[in-house]
Each structure stands twice: as C-alpha cells, then as structure tokens.
Length: 450
Ligand code: 2M8
Image 1 (cartoon, rainbow, N blue to C red):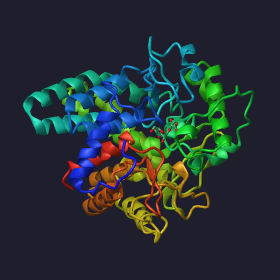
Image 2: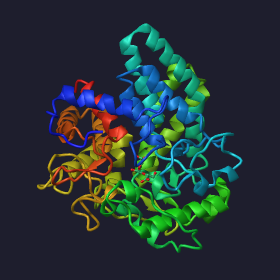
Image 3: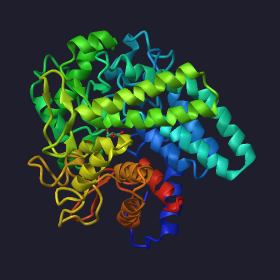
C-alpha cells in the first residue's frame, strides 16, 4: 500500500499502473476484497464496479468476480451484500453475528450477510461483454458464454427485487437497512433511524474504528440501530414477508431503484445477446417501466430532486442528498426533467458550489443542514459515485458534462492514494486507502476515450 504520494507524479499512465496494482494486491483468487484492511470480504456492489475495472485488464477474470459473487445468491434470488471470506477476521458484524444460517434460503456452505445492495451487476456483466468484443473473437465467445451462464441468475435477482422487495408494485425497491442503500450514514436515514427503539442488543465491539478515524465513521447511536435491525431480521429468520411486517426500517430507496432501472436496461440487452424468450423481455421491460413511473412519483419540484420515501412514517424524506439525482441514473429523461435535474446538478448547492476543490458531486449537498465534509456519506465525495454520474451523463448524451466530470475525477485521483472518499473542499483522501472500487473506476476512465 502507498502511504505517501511523493514519488507519484499523477500522470494518467501512473494512475493506471497503480490502479492495476491495487486490484492485484486486493485479489484473493477469483474475487477481490473491497479494501486491504477495513473491508476484508467480498461486497456485492463493490464487486460489480471492480468487475468493470478488471475487464480492462482481463475480461475472464472480471467475469469470475461476478461468478463468485453469484455463487452466494440465495434461493429467493437475493444477492447478499457481503460474502464472507472464512480466512479473514477483523470485520464486524461477522457471519456469526449475522446468524444467516437460520435462513432456509442461504446456499449450503456459504457464509453471507442477510441483506443486499444496489444491483449494478447486469450493468457490469454487459460492460465485460462489450470490452471482450472489442478485444478478439476468443474473448468475445467466452464473454457470451459467461452471459448465458449468468443470465438466469441475473433474472432471478431482478425478479426478487421487483416482487419480494416491492409488494406494492410501486416500481420502487424497499430497503430494510441503511447498509442496503450503500450510503450507510446518509442524512436521508436520520429520522427513520431516530424513530427506532433499540431493544435487547447483545454487546459488540466495532472493528471499523480500529482501521479508520472514528470521526469519519458512523456514530455509535447509528451502529446500535444498524445492529438492532439485523437482530430483528435474524429473529424473523430473514424471511421476506416477516421482515416486511416487523422491520423497524422500511424505506423506498430512489437511488437503489434508479440503479435497478438502469440494470433492467442492461439486462434487456443481455436478454437479446443470449436469445432469451420474449416473455422474459416483456417482464424486464415491465420492471423497467414501472421503476420509471415510481421515480416520477417521487420527484419533488421544490427541491428539484427525487426523494426517498419512509414507508413506516408514511412521509417523503426531504434532504438534499446524492440519491436525489436518481432520475439521471435511471435515464429515459423527458426534456423537462433533464433540464431540471441538470440545473440542480450545476447549481451552487452541488457542482457549482464555490468551495469545492474539484467539480465532483458531494454525497450530501453543502447546503443541507446535515452536511459534514469529513463523515463518510454525509458530505465527502466518492470516486465510485463520480463514475456512476459520469456513466449516466454519457448514456444521456451529455458528453461535455461527462468529459468535465471524468477529468475532475482523475484530477482528484492524481494523489495516487485511491481513497475510499475525499474531503470535498480540501481534496484530502479519507477512509480506507487503496480502495478497490476507486482503483477500478480509475481504470475504466483511463481506458475510455471520452
Ligand atoms: C461501506 O459499508 C460497509 C457495510 O456494508 C461498512 O461500512 O462496514 C459502504 O460504503 C458500502 O457502500 C460499501 O459497499 C462497503 C464496502 O466498500 O463499505
């Protein structure tokens, strides 16, 4: 791991070389740990981004990343958010604390958490195939075979999200836990967490505080609630219907749902490549269109952002967080919505903020009262999220904006430290260094022309 950036000039070539090295260092043979020490296991959405970066080094190895993850898919179709490495210790909650062995749905012999993360996987699988096709015929043939193999699993994963996680058929995915959002301590979850009464919680020791500065991590009050939700889910044997009835945290997550829309578009393309039945295509189209309608209903014309919805409290969550840009990620923008969302993005509350070190989106707007420039998902900028914005802008044909964002993101990474997240005003790298998904997205930017 680099502890100093003194010998690092920050040229694109140097960034690419170091990014590839990090992915190699964090490679545990067919799968990649999310970070050298803080995250020693395989995380679901990290893996998808990692596969996108790996594809530029070795498309077969990239495919293997997703193959290993999907081997832990539950019988319900859920792809768990952590696949534990039995050889690693030092992360909490560990598999014993999760107690997922109580579920009849976990695959035999697997050690996983009992919840999920945003479904970037179909986007990643589609990406691998595209890159393989540009390489040579042998790689393209292997990538097509890989898509054939993964397609039924991707379909089951999406079916799970569209049914078990949306019994209301609202088009929006219900999340059971802030960890499922990926943006763990976002201010979006503050009220929903505050409303939770923590019951009889077995004692615990946090390991994350040994590997990261506690002032940047979620608070103890948040952790108590994170672990209490896990207790409740465990008591219900991770049964979906039970969780829906008993879970103290039940939120329609717009960022998650938007990624699901984009992933359904990718899955439609995969369905074409693998000659899937027309009935599948009709189903996936229905999920996608329902998602777009659901997001549309959560648009807030006063904030010009899309808002999460707290199902327990029955209220929209009025905060200015990155998730509000969900319609941009989902795509299929009407001219009015495009204009509105880009105006928000350019405004002083976001990319136009005068104090930003680089014009990359902070996880929470500096204008929001809950903004905290150093604490995790409450303000810092996340290179991997820059990538999602860049990708969505590219998909939307906003090539100039995408190019500016790509360059700003690479400027941010010129320190060679590959931070998990960055202080938006000073550009200081924070959290874990040599974070895998940061290295992965750098590789993608440096191998893409725009
Ligand atoms: C963070 O989440 C984990 C829990 O899942 C943690 O804080 O221990 C989040 O940033 C999440 O989005 C990410 O997938 C994970 C690994 O990078 O770390």
